[in-house]
Image (cartoon, rainbow, N blue to C red; front, side, top):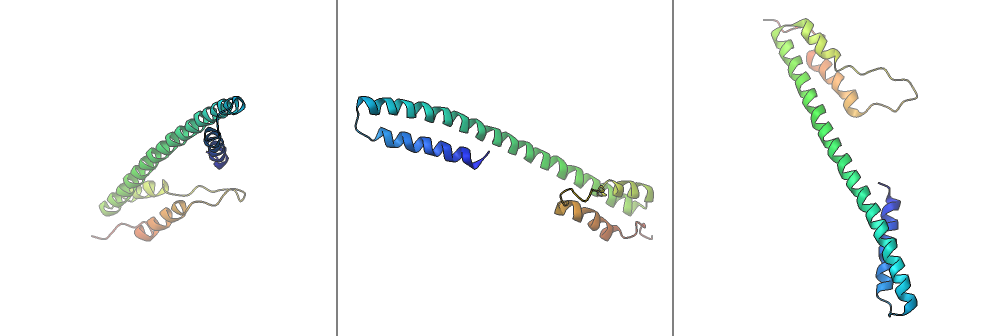
Length: 132
């Protein structure tokens, strides 16, 4: 949703409020009706945009939960493989955390994309299992 939409909505609302406070005459009644129509149209449009944004935010929240769940599951699998001494499973799990190579013209990776592989490398070192 663009800030311009909110500004337009507020402008039509303030026009309607201003015209509704003026003394009644035939010309002001016509202007008031026109302002009411303009306001209603922009209010409907603005409300639709707000609803769209609310839906997008809900989808983002759901996606965040799914991503966090997947990351937690992968972390659990990596820790389990590490402490059980299963080198193959550990390497397979860690490969899922690798950052894909990006071309130089793309946006820099987010802090999460940068920190997860480094964190696993710090935790699990050279992928060797603990000695028993």
